[in-house]
Image 1 (spheres, one colour):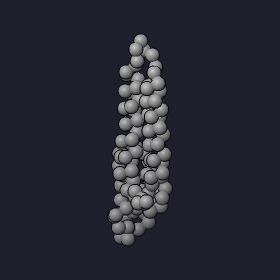
Image 2 (spheres, one colour):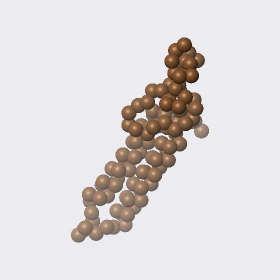
Image 3 (cartoon, one colour):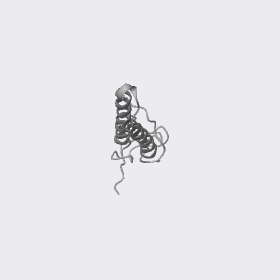
Image 4 (cartoon, helix red, strand yellow):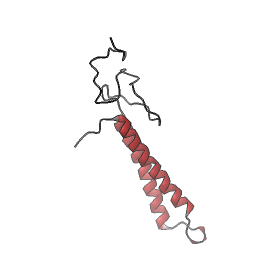
Length: 106
């Protein structure tokens, strides 16, 4: 199985899954049945949205990691270019041989 190495793409995929879970939850909440009754369809949608939200959290926790030191990066929406732990670039295709331990050029 191919590993997804780029933490930026994994974070975007996790947020897409999370927002789709919130969308399913909003749809299920905004369209009640007759006389406001909760039907089996609504319960099914709530279960699906909960599963999507849990899966997105697990996905981001497992895959949004530094490609060099494998530590968890932040899960905020803005991008991070340098790992706060090892000070290497988070782009897995960026060469790190020309950087010292603090992420600066020698």
